[in-house]
Length: 633
Ligand code: WT7
Picture 1 (cartoon, rainbow, N blue to C red):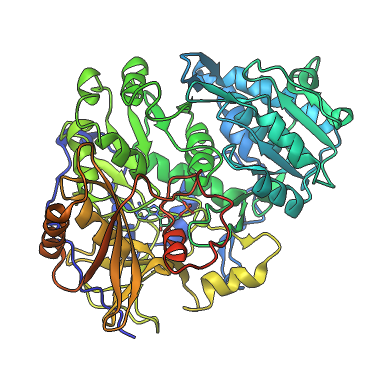
Picture 2: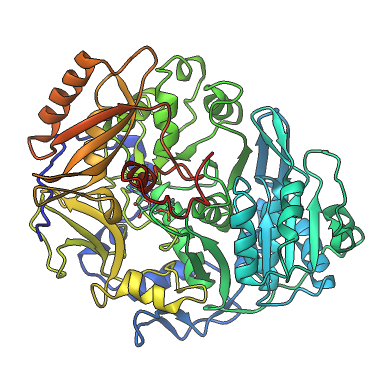
């Protein structure tokens, strides 16, 4: 089997970090040298020291039973205590912890002290309902402060939360509740979406009819939508009623470092969503460290991650990491283009956001409107930008860099997964950047690109991305599916983590992620990642978004079939088709043999914004679409 991906996007631009950025950076020399083989356990122990432990660990890493790694063995700690209570004793007590805003212009500011009291009251309320350490609590909530309070309260009790993204429909929501035998469901009367209120409670009621385990439903009055009690009303209680009169003190549960923290399902871009299990201490140390070092968090920062809390990006970097660092996290409920595509930059201006973290899909979308909107607002408070979720097409990177970063602010292209819990491959603020590359593994992590047998491939060639070192925020299992855990991630390259992505490393050791290995194209014996072909299309001025799949061809095995969303004013006529083919061939060389090009209005995506190529493939081959529970409408 040929592993080489001879298709090379001709991307040679390099952007060196600004002096100011380097001067400020948290990252010290020791950290940047760690990848050259310094003491891994000492490195993470040093990071873990910064937290308050009830009892210190005996051993940083126990790898005696791979792949069941254990971190901070016998350490006792509580993550919520470290994210909230710890700050009450410091000058941060009255600093804003959560800055909530929404598309209607409402805002709420919650200080660390207020958050502390609210979490304690809610934890007491949950205890009164019989919630104990180890119980599973489902949440079907919008981006609202009560979601953060609920998660932190569970964490303080030691209950395991399972957040279901509020954009998912009844089916996947019921499936998750039943799979986990959830005891409690927390939901809301509604969520704001593009000027409308979506009635979440109605969906929750429908779901509850099919749940056999939920004993109590807690309803947050978020939008003021009138709440209709259902047949299940005997089980219902409002959030306000639950905390009314509760004590604002609550003693955090003593958690073992390896006690489960949460279960979260993957976005299902290439198959049925998996229930990923994360545990306490390693996750805590991993997410806080990466946010601090990669986004260079200081006391004067205002952090904004636009990801939804219903996905890992939100778990790790909207709630846990920023609070663990004692920073202010902006929680925004609304779309990137409502009421207009300037809303995000307006928010940056209004609040003075300093660090801004978003997804390539959003950038590609906003890019279609050119620089019309960014020009209106003063975004000079920004110091670092970031992206996550998919490979970022170099053209989208350049747009972001020029129009939002004003060619001064670095972009942290962070590669990671629900499974990894934290960033694993990403620039630091001091790293020279190449548009479209996530650059190198973060300190303490080693990665490589290998062939099917696990041998490293030569530089420039494509292969499978593996992670060679254990890292603290690694997932510990798939919920009740150990077999799939081993088979999907650990079997192919014993001792190493198989990320399921394909990538190549360039002559500087920079990683270029080329997409999921399940999406790979096989043309005349060459394995070709989807991302470089798509980026070549997107670098043409007529194309806004592209998805490519391999279509069976009697001669080549497969040829590229492309689905294109064009920019305003373009039509896919013969002349443009010829032009696009020439352009892509010029960018990539002859290996990417192009077949049909189709113009489409939009691409099938997961609710988290990832292109679902398997849907396009199935449709093209006339096959069953498979699991579509996370497909956007
Ligand atoms: C998959 C994981 C991690 C939070 C959101 C997604 C792709 C993610 C990048 C990046 C290229 C990326 C990978 C990965 N991915 N970040 N910076 N460059 N690809 O989490 O839903 O678990 O998806 O997203 O293919 O395997 P997820």
